[in-house]
Length: 406
Image (cartoon, rainbow, N blue to C red; front, side, top):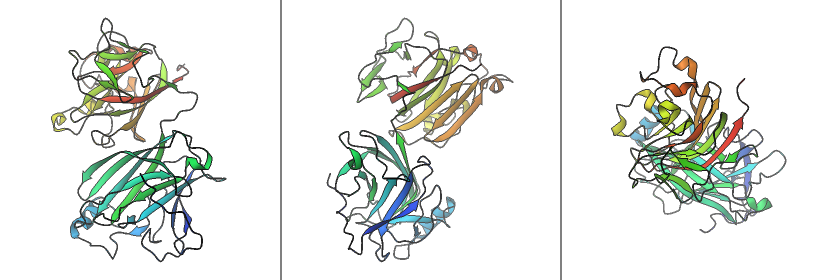
């Protein structure tokens, strides 16, 4: 893919200068900067209007005077309580450029580092569907370091929530290991693109305290349920995927057992997909009862319209319900963490805490399912995936063990 940016010319009236914007999804020592023409006289990049907030990027008024302002778009904005906010407006042919920095120097991502980018996008009703090209580039704008590996759009009236995964070149070094996040609306696109709630978070890298549970190639370190094989799961494209062609829906469990831990992983579900994360489970029996099961589910599918709250994604099956609304569309990759320490369980989905539960308090008046869950008393066991024959997939599975709760 060709570079989107020409080398910067300091003598040009369109020379790019940084304006700081804080992004809460980056750690405290990293700021997000937007670059725009120093003279402010061109709308080809951005118009220097508006203020910044800690979470939301707000640069240009919406709808801009030069663009159509159909009532339908305005109504959607009102419904989303956005009518008084300001947006990043990217006209056809324009590129919005954001620079990652530390207080002392340019932020230098490690070779092979991955980023999750997410944003809300809107268009004027008559503008069709402009294309947004998302990429990472080196500081001088000439070397493309990464590009969109997946974009998924969630339709919501004229607004869509979109997601992209960006990959730093594994050969990148030093300042070539890049600083620019580029949002480009191609010149042949059919209208101005409005961007809001832009986030960028680093994923897929761990401290030395985390250990990988999956080598990306085979199922070394994993076992089937007691007395069964592990052929209900296969490895495809660096992910563990439930095999829809298997003649049975066995569970896939770690050979090792764990007490207290933080589990990180990514997952994707197909339409109507159903699976689960086994926690502190024995090798035999149904993990939802013999241990604990954190639900993995396409919650919004019509087939699950009558699902109980404790059956939705992220819930501890039969025990504690999770919040809804933070799962990405089917086919997109989600990031999730499960923290288990003593009797406390926390589930974090795409940066949002969707469940905080004390297992004892949750069943003080009985289980929500009305069934016995003897596995609640377990303090140790295997981790794994509860197969239901749906091609749900998991990757980047890492664990950090914690000191047992006294």
